Length: 441
Ligand code: GDP
Image (cartoon, rainbow, N blue to C red):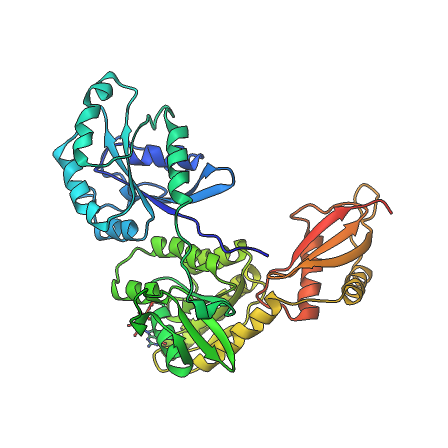
């Protein structure tokens, strides 16, 4: 069984020109961001994933890329939104210049978020840095590290410090009553109607626990019951909060969706049909797939769709079908409630597929038939032979195939086999995992 993971989000903050972007590049590893010496030049990349420990990754935000060019402190509403959504801040200062008033001003603006913070004194390779070091203690940040983002000094210590903080990020605890309820994420870009859909769902089902309940330990999730079965709608407090505080950057919202998806078994991807299917929608769809969760797509604002929009949408839909293995799709209007009653049945269907279990006899018949009707192409004059198949897990369904050879990860024949399993078991929107092991007959 897969335990739900939480990946921590780390924001790199600081006034302009202290080296935030260089540090971001360094931590992300590849040259994902372009560094310019001039202040205010927009960065190529704002978000990235950094490896900080064995098998431990964090999401990194370079807030320099979210700053307003005209703001001398490099702050903006988007920077505040990123800070609010983060678990850890890296406040970067320039060791060569020493503590400036602007550093203090940035910290004064950000400290009220009360986020764990590491002070990163950059450009520490210079002699000046060794002399100014003491000044920074005045900021009152206890954890201080000296680095050179440009030359890579101090990176190991910094990664260790990030890893230690990331390990303490609590996985939100669902209410005790929710133990048996499958967690469901409602995800999508800002303003697509997540909050409206949530309100409709809550309005038409029996709510067992909700963030509005006013309990002492305020839950962030909503536990509902539909046709006798419980569902845990996750991070509903966050959905409502973010819907109110409009203006959060779309890229940030897309990145944050990952945290919800990680906790869920099924993700309901809400799309605003008046916008068509955007790259942001596809980015979230890709994340659902990458994390191996089941998907349902809710095409929202259907009441606003005209013929031209409809034509465009149906033209774009195959992209989503391909990305998410033909997920259940519901056309809805969260504003009027039309079609909303189809959402939870679609979720139930995806969930059933996510936990589908099959007897060994049936599995072997299924794979044998698939191989017979479309034999695998032989490679180097040697054909691929399947001996035996067995299911080794569910959530998502995972099958182990014993054969005379393994199949490369991207072998089209894998996709073919997975699709046959999908068709036979109605696993729409559900990933099917195949593990191929080599065995001598
Ligand atoms: P969120 O940011 O994804 O939670 O989006 P909201 O639920 O806050 O919705 C954004 C805006 O779209 C609000 O003004 C809603 O009233 C509006 N909206 C949401 N769903 C629909 C819909 O189905 N039809 C129409 N016409 N408007 C909608």
